[in-house]
Image (cartoon, rainbow, N blue to C red; front, side, top):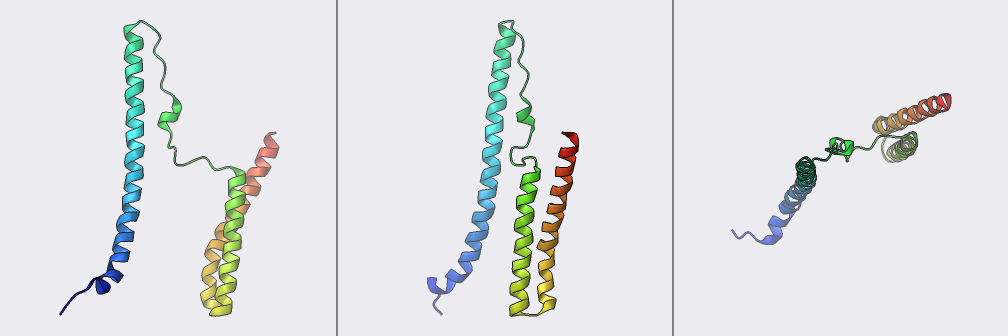
Length: 133
Protein backbone atom coordinates (compact mmCIF):
# COMPACT_ATOMS: atom_id res chain seq x y z
CA UNK A 1 0.00 0.00 0.00
CA UNK A 2 1.52 3.23 -1.13
CA UNK A 3 0.78 6.47 0.72
CA UNK A 4 1.14 9.51 -1.43
CA UNK A 5 1.11 13.19 -0.54
CA UNK A 6 -2.29 13.44 -2.20
CA UNK A 7 -3.87 11.30 0.55
CA UNK A 8 -2.10 13.07 3.43
CA UNK A 9 -2.88 16.63 2.36
CA UNK A 10 -6.53 16.75 3.60
CA UNK A 11 -5.27 15.86 7.09
CA UNK A 12 -2.39 18.34 7.02
CA UNK A 13 -4.50 21.42 6.28
CA UNK A 14 -6.39 21.50 9.63
CA UNK A 15 -3.28 20.49 11.57
CA UNK A 16 -1.23 23.29 10.04
CA UNK A 17 -4.09 25.78 10.55
CA UNK A 18 -4.36 24.91 14.25
CA UNK A 19 -0.60 25.05 14.78
CA UNK A 20 -0.33 28.38 12.97
CA UNK A 21 -3.28 29.87 14.88
CA UNK A 22 -1.90 28.87 18.26
CA UNK A 23 1.63 29.84 17.19
CA UNK A 24 0.62 33.34 16.13
CA UNK A 25 -1.19 33.88 19.43
CA UNK A 26 1.82 32.67 21.40
CA UNK A 27 4.14 34.87 19.33
CA UNK A 28 1.99 37.94 20.05
CA UNK A 29 2.08 37.21 23.79
CA UNK A 30 5.85 36.63 23.75
CA UNK A 31 6.54 39.85 21.81
CA UNK A 32 4.33 41.85 24.20
CA UNK A 33 6.19 40.35 27.15
CA UNK A 34 9.57 41.18 25.59
CA UNK A 35 8.49 44.77 24.96
CA UNK A 36 7.30 45.26 28.53
CA UNK A 37 10.46 43.64 29.93
CA UNK A 38 12.64 45.98 27.86
CA UNK A 39 10.65 49.04 28.98
CA UNK A 40 10.98 48.03 32.64
CA UNK A 41 14.73 47.50 32.19
CA UNK A 42 15.14 50.96 30.65
CA UNK A 43 13.13 52.59 33.45
CA UNK A 44 15.19 50.72 36.03
CA UNK A 45 18.44 52.00 34.48
CA UNK A 46 17.02 55.52 34.34
CA UNK A 47 16.05 55.36 38.02
CA UNK A 48 19.51 54.06 39.00
CA UNK A 49 21.23 56.88 37.10
CA UNK A 50 18.93 59.43 38.73
CA UNK A 51 19.74 58.04 42.19
CA UNK A 52 23.50 58.08 41.46
CA UNK A 53 23.36 61.72 40.36
CA UNK A 54 21.19 62.74 43.31
CA UNK A 55 18.27 63.71 41.14
CA UNK A 56 14.62 63.12 41.91
CA UNK A 57 13.52 59.62 40.84
CA UNK A 58 10.89 59.78 38.07
CA UNK A 59 7.76 57.72 38.73
CA UNK A 60 6.83 54.83 36.48
CA UNK A 61 4.18 55.78 33.91
CA UNK A 62 0.71 54.36 34.53
CA UNK A 63 0.58 53.03 30.95
CA UNK A 64 3.01 50.26 31.89
CA UNK A 65 0.46 48.73 34.23
CA UNK A 66 -2.46 48.81 31.81
CA UNK A 67 -3.26 46.12 29.28
CA UNK A 68 -2.70 47.60 25.84
CA UNK A 69 -4.90 45.01 24.12
CA UNK A 70 -8.15 46.00 25.84
CA UNK A 71 -9.13 49.59 25.14
CA UNK A 72 -11.97 51.04 27.16
CA UNK A 73 -15.27 50.74 25.36
CA UNK A 74 -16.93 53.96 24.34
CA UNK A 75 -20.58 54.52 23.51
CA UNK A 76 -19.63 54.88 19.84
CA UNK A 77 -17.89 51.50 19.78
CA UNK A 78 -20.96 49.92 21.40
CA UNK A 79 -23.17 51.57 18.78
CA UNK A 80 -21.01 50.23 15.96
CA UNK A 81 -20.70 46.67 17.26
CA UNK A 82 -24.39 46.67 18.28
CA UNK A 83 -25.53 47.59 14.78
CA UNK A 84 -23.19 45.02 13.25
CA UNK A 85 -24.45 42.24 15.52
CA UNK A 86 -28.10 43.24 15.04
CA UNK A 87 -27.83 43.26 11.25
CA UNK A 88 -25.77 40.06 11.28
CA UNK A 89 -28.45 38.34 13.35
CA UNK A 90 -31.17 39.55 10.98
CA UNK A 91 -29.22 38.40 7.92
CA UNK A 92 -28.44 34.99 9.37
CA UNK A 93 -32.02 34.54 10.54
CA UNK A 94 -33.43 35.47 7.16
CA UNK A 95 -31.02 33.21 5.30
CA UNK A 96 -31.69 30.27 7.61
CA UNK A 97 -35.47 30.77 7.47
CA UNK A 98 -35.41 30.80 3.66
CA UNK A 99 -33.06 27.82 3.31
CA UNK A 100 -34.12 25.69 6.28
CA UNK A 101 -36.91 26.16 8.80
CA UNK A 102 -37.83 28.54 11.61
CA UNK A 103 -36.43 26.23 14.30
CA UNK A 104 -33.00 26.46 12.70
CA UNK A 105 -33.37 30.20 12.12
CA UNK A 106 -33.91 30.67 15.87
CA UNK A 107 -30.13 30.38 16.34
CA UNK A 108 -29.88 33.82 14.78
CA UNK A 109 -31.47 35.22 17.93
CA UNK A 110 -28.08 34.95 19.67
CA UNK A 111 -26.21 37.63 17.65
CA UNK A 112 -29.46 39.59 17.33
CA UNK A 113 -29.92 39.77 21.12
CA UNK A 114 -26.24 40.71 21.61
CA UNK A 115 -26.75 43.56 19.14
CA UNK A 116 -29.89 44.76 20.94
CA UNK A 117 -28.06 44.63 24.29
CA UNK A 118 -25.16 46.69 22.93
CA UNK A 119 -27.57 49.24 21.46
CA UNK A 120 -29.36 49.48 24.81
CA UNK A 121 -26.02 50.00 26.52
CA UNK A 122 -25.23 52.73 24.00
CA UNK A 123 -28.51 54.50 24.78
CA UNK A 124 -27.93 54.27 28.54
CA UNK A 125 -24.34 55.51 28.28
CA UNK A 126 -25.43 58.38 26.01
CA UNK A 127 -28.12 59.45 28.51
CA UNK A 128 -25.59 59.31 31.33
CA UNK A 129 -23.12 61.46 29.33
CA UNK A 130 -25.83 64.04 28.59
CA UNK A 131 -26.87 64.13 32.25
CA UNK A 132 -23.27 64.78 33.36
CA UNK A 133 -22.66 67.52 30.77
